Image (tube, rainbow, N blue to C red):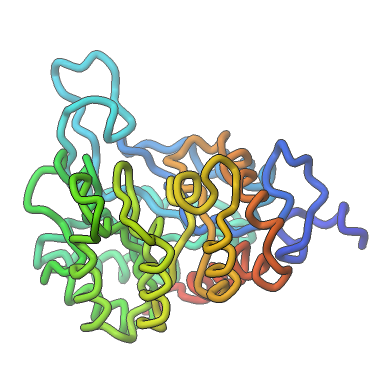
Length: 335
């Protein structure tokens, strides 16, 4: 069958498809980082998600909600749907995972196979959180492909969220890491490597590494390579390279501002990041990091093309598809 007659999500990974570049990447992809619930805990719905994936050359997606909800303060006239919409606080919201599971299960079986749902709706500073994970895992057997995105150190969101500061080495997460390790479930986490006020060295990197050292068999995925707004350190690619060298089960995703500000600033691929990606392509994946806004899926992923064009075909196939498939595929919960 000619390539242009094959559904976009069934085309050979890493090779150009026939879609207009205005509608998505030239390369069939797995979106490894997609929030299908926003901070108001609302979603455009499953049909809108699948339609956006089809338009955008996205064959599969790792999807999840948001573990916190944005408070609609009495004084605010408009419903906030993003954590920076105003200075109202955020609070942990466990029902987000039920919304994700219901979204997935409402789809036909063929479409369900295109989605890798993760569970994140728990307070990562509460030692009872493992109870919530176990309950969810058992309530929806065969649904879950992993845990995340855990929102730990996270610029302004940390300051806006009620309760104790979440961090990768909080002991409430230890039984969750153990649970994930025992079941070979990946754990996707947002853990800033430094604070917005410290740009000369990674002050929070030790928190991440405590978890990596204590759970060497746990498959951690470091969202955005540990970056966030106003968070940066010198020689960022060398830090990421050391993590990949030292911890063989660690995977990173290129999503959100790591790409625009560090990897490919001004649309210019940085040679150091091209070399790193070639060397570790089996442990790097790509994501849109959209918070719903499915209409933006194509443009968000299309912007990676200028970088992907510079990679070898095997490396490109890995970061577009094979890494995410290996990390999230085949990890559905079995009770």
